[in-house]
Length: 371
Ligand SMILES: Cc1ncc(COP(=O)(O)O)c(C=O)c1O
Image 1 (spheres, protein in one colour):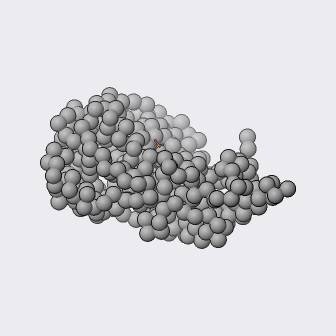
Image 2 (spheres, protein in one colour):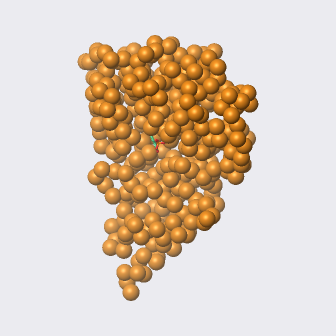
Image 3 (cartoon, helix red, strand yellow):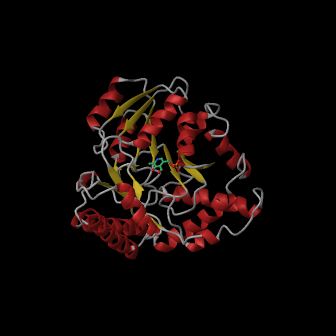
C-alpha cells in the first residue's frame, strides 16, 4: 500500500503514529479498563469545553460520524410542540435543515449567502416575533467555506430570549479558542476525527444537564436516542450498542497528546500559523480566497478557481495527489472553489512542502497549454 498522503482536508485528518498504535489492542466493551477510559474521555471533553459535571453539563458519546451526533440532538431534544430556528450559510447548515425535514421537526430557516454571516438583527426579529421558537441551531465553523459564524452573539440572543442553543462545532472544537459558557451553548456537537486528532468512529455532545433531563422519550430514533445513550453511559458506563472500542482508545491517546502539546491554546496557535503561512503564499501564487478576511477562520480555506485557461481542478487535484498531497474539492452551490485545510497532524514544514508542490503543479499545467 502507498504511504500516507498528507491530508489538507476537513477530516478524516492525519493522526500521529502513536494515536494509531493505541488501537493495537482488543478490549471488550464491558472491560473495566475500557469503561474507565470512556469515563475519563467524557470528563476531559467537558473540561475542554470549559465546563464540568459539577457545573451541570454532561458528555454523551454517540457511535458513527459527526452527522449522527447532529441528528441525535436535533431528533432527540426538540419536543413535538417545539420549533427550531436554523441559521444557514453553507452545506452543513443545510444538512441540519434536511434532518429537521426528515424528522418532521417544525422549523424556520434563516439563510444567507455562503460568504456572509447571518444578520444579528434579523435573528433577533425572529426570536422576538415568533414565540413558538424553542431552539436555535447554527454551525460554528461552516467547513464548506471556512467562515466563522458568530456563536457568541447568537448565544447571547438565545440567553436573552430563553431559547435553547445547539451548535455544530464539528470542525472548530479543539481548534478554536472558545468555551460553552462564553457562547451560552446548551448542546455542542463535535467528532473524534477533527481538531482533537483522533480517528473516525464517534461524535460527542456536550449538553446542559437541566435541558437534557427534560428530553426523556422525545427521540424520534432508537439508535440515536441521545437521552437513552446518556442514561446508558451514566448507569453502568456502557454503550447501549457496540462501541467503537479502537477509536476510543486512539482518542484517549489523542487527548493526552493534545495536553502534551500545551492544550487548546497551543493547538490553535499551530493551526493559525499553518493558516497564515498558507494564505500569504497562496495569495502570492495568485489564488483568491472566497471569504473576506474578517470572516475567515484558520481551520480551512476555500479558494476560487483561478481564471486562466490552464486551470483544470481534476488535473490539479490528481497531480497534487500523486505528489502525496490531498486537498479537498469545493462544496459551494454557486461558485467554483477548492479547499485547503490546516488541521490534523500538519506542521509548518508540511505547509511549505504543499506550497512547493502547488507552485510546481501550476507551472506544469501552464506549460501543458503553451506547448
Ligand atoms: C461543520 C460540520 N458539520 C458536520 C459535518 C459532518 O460530519 P461527518 O462527515 O463526520 O458526518 C462536518 C464534516 O466535515 C462538518 O465540517
